[in-house]
Length: 213
Length: 213
DNA sequence: CGATTGGCTATTGTCGACAATCGGGTCCAA
DNA sequence: TTGGACCCGATTGTCGACAATAGCCAATCG
Image 1 (tube, each protein chain N blue to C red):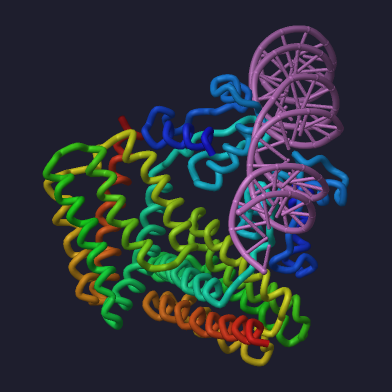
Image 2 (cartoon, each protein chain N blue to C red; image 1 turned 30 degrees about the vertical axis):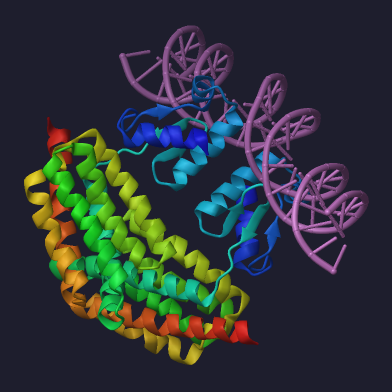
């Protein structure tokens, strides 16, 4: 839906910052549609994990505390560990070379994005690599739940690209890619968990610093 | 919301079987409310994973194939493994005796339910024990995502209680409870995974048998 | 002076009517 | 016979108006 897309983009690009209160009436006027249309869009965004409803009061752009960041990265760790197990197992058993190719392609895009230096491109390529692995698992519900986590993480990555260090990103993802493409199940699971632990600590620290400022 | 609760109950108790097509107009007449109210209820149930929307066509009660069952149990396994890790770690490090108590209580209810023999009570106690562990993890997003999986599993458990064997249920849960209450992290994780593997195979087999009938 | 009650405003919750869209069936023509 | 265009019923999508509710501020009472 068009109006949901507009709002999603605004939130994900940081134009509508976390904690912003959204009212149906104002949004309806602003976008030139009726409240019913806004309402379905808000329901959609709620399902995507981007906003929250407060009965008889309004809607709020999801806002993350340090504890929320901890939740996101512990959850993401578990979901990526499952995906890594499934993909690595498939690569190990079958000769699924198409899977390895797609992972290598996504990793290649990340490498050239880091070489380029464009923050948005780097972030997109980073998320793209992770999403490629998730999609390869052939697990709709896993993909859906992962997408919810990813979108919430993106809210913060977008509004504060303090978590992107172009010089280290490629190296941090190499263990994940290599263990997967050779079908080393145990190492792939471990690599996914380790990666999320590192990233999670960074986001928690970042949010704690913001909270203190 | 009242109307969402009525529909949820109907679906979870099997009165509205999987695959049923729901139309806003008929539901509105049937429950004596307007379409707008039904619509928000449907959006709520969609977020809960109980129904699906088909644009310009209607809404359908979630229907599970054998592959869907595989998805549910692999996902549940990962989520319960995470919860088990968190809870067992907490019990090990702190003297969180309240946690052990709540787990033992839930296990006690399961035992007496199995002794009683009432299917619905057994199912509720079974889900209750798992939910207790999830809740103890202190992880809102984990609880929410787990709830989605649980509700979808419940759709089938309710409509075909072939998966409940009162004589073995208690024994199947004992490793989970014992490893958690003594704070054995690794064993707790393993117990959670093993349990889900068993249950998943049962549901897959059940669905495959239905598909063949 | 503090707490409680009452009303007021802003916002969501609910409603019925109309517009847009989808799917299937029919009719016609090649 | 078969392919395709068209029409029609059913259903959701959208709209504006009214009802219900929460939160706030002030007035009142102890």
